[in-house]
Length: 162
Image (cartoon, rainbow, N blue to C red; front, side, top):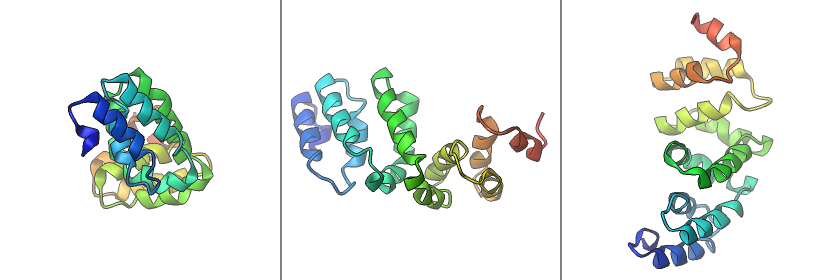
């Protein structure tokens, strides 16, 4: 709760104390503080997140993919390197099993973000990703694939798009 306090001093101390927690439950609070308007709070959150860019935290970051996507859409320039680092971690071979599970998540926002990541993942069977997206009950999961500039041409051909 202290990470949402109106005082930047309190939020900064909260971010530092959150850094002492290493279970993964601290991740969403630290992610939110990455976009804080007080630079010392942002810095403390960035330090904490940077120390968690490790395969041991893959599932914790995957659980927070919707928050990460929102942060990416609204964040300022100072959060870009952290978001890039999180994505690189999630695309690493060590995180592939967690990412595969996330494609079947009951949370549609996690599935959408997972599909965005999966199509950029090296070594992933892209035909399988396409099949899963087409069978997903959420049309936006399929739309994510259609809109990706990095998608292979056969995705468009398979969907018979111009």
